[in-house]
Length: 174
Image 1 (tube, helix red, strand yellow):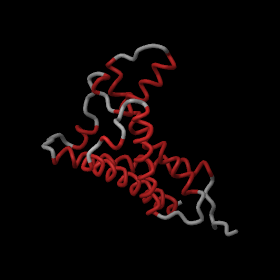
Image 2: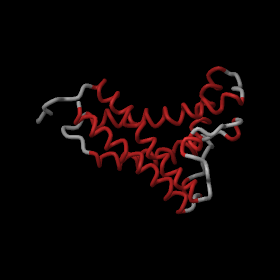
Image 3: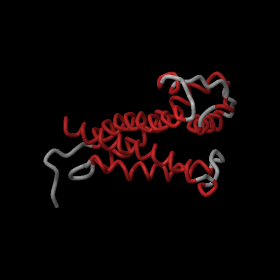
Image 4: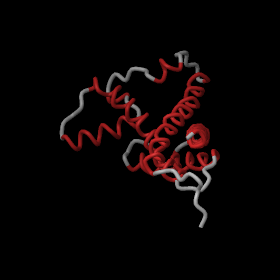
């Protein structure tokens, strides 16, 4: 069995993975922003990314998931004023947490490679289309048209590429 020259500790793999996941989330959002602009959107990237969420009905899916968890645990309804903050934290937290999982996987390899993030992005995409329909937030995958799925898959592949490349770069620096 070959051992890497400088094996990565599990804690280092998680921390580097969290950072890489945040960069990957930025890459995912860049693809979604491009789609927004192509459809006529005019907001700047920062204004689009941190657009106000007025109420829970308008909250994106990551926020809806966290809302359900918090409300289920506390047995109290969350006010609409918390929709933006919780949705934003959930979106970035999910991307970073998935990056931490990637870090554990890639950090366990003898030689992580930047391209390993691409199939990881596809796995995250597939997981979303299993978990979110089960939660009633998405339709089953077969009910989406090919164009919608292609855009979403491309965003997740960008997430994976950004996560994998950033993880690789950060492990080279360390």
